[in-house]
Image (cartoon, rainbow, N blue to C red):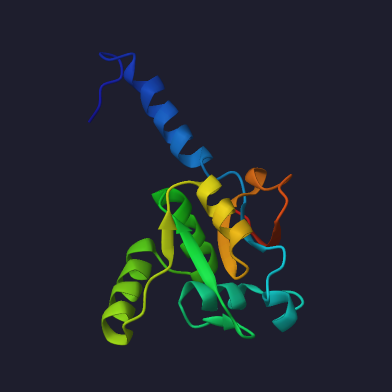
Length: 152
């Protein structure tokens, strides 16, 4: 058991760590696609199930155009996206893709380092789909937000 009387500086450090960890997702994540995405020829208003199907490799094409999903390498962002769209824990999602790659010979979605990389990919690729923090796309051109994932 910690004795905070003997170590007066530890409580503020613990509180700061807890606050930093929990505040990372007070902001929504948004799912973005290229502004000229073929998705809109297939679906006027995409739903969560449509996004889940892309994330799990079940939807490979929108019309005749290939879907090009990307993930973020940031573990917390990826974790929150996977739980918010697929209802899975990160290790379940990773296991799912390992099994799918071995059994079906398909590739998992590309993982990019930063939100800026995800945005560039989606802007460049007609079938691009990714996710970023909501504040990162509010003034961008070349992408459309198709779904918002809110966190309490």
